[in-house]
Length: 287
Image (cartoon, rainbow, N blue to C red):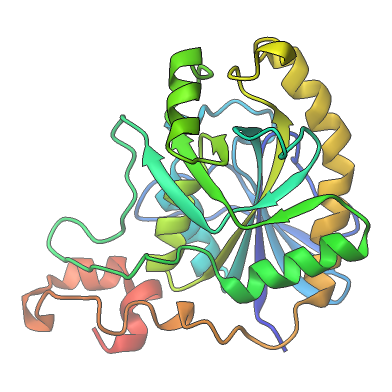
């Protein structure tokens, strides 16, 4: 059967109903503090680990999230597959508010010092990232959404802006001219780190607005976003529950072997302190 399934809840998703045998676990990581305590339990028979990305009270800005600690904690807790639930804006008219999108590509437009790799300070690894989303998981999520009768779009490119302010109209139109599909503030770091941690990763993006390019829709406001977040939250939770119950045998995607040929630093040149620090990630390779 499948190993543990991690769920990162975005804006509006601060808990998962239906968890049984729950425990709250605080994890100390060598990369600092995660966004909060992890909630572990069982959901329809599957072992689940849940973490709200912005904290329970939504007090952590996208630029301030400790992505490395969040993903490392998931790894320590035995997560093999990671589902990210995220709010996003639409850059195409056919992708309407309250729809779900399952992006299969990302473009990074962050400009702060977001730390997106575990391999620094004396160890180098270059993981393959051409296809950043686990195709097996994305297919399972799509089938689950269709089963529930939700409007879902398979594939697309998620452009990761810095935030926390929304786009200018010029930026929004620029991204549209590039062929981007949706826009958000968080998922690129999670996807990169999940690949380094050899987890299967997929995003469930819940559209809250048309960004500001769609002039007849008015400018994006927090009120608009929060209103649609609340409407989408219940459907997102139903979708997560259905996905978790549908995931069976481990994926055949290769995500679980992402580091097999990626670490380029000679083993004998890696400091013992680094080996100890990264043991949950690199230990399987005898490093």
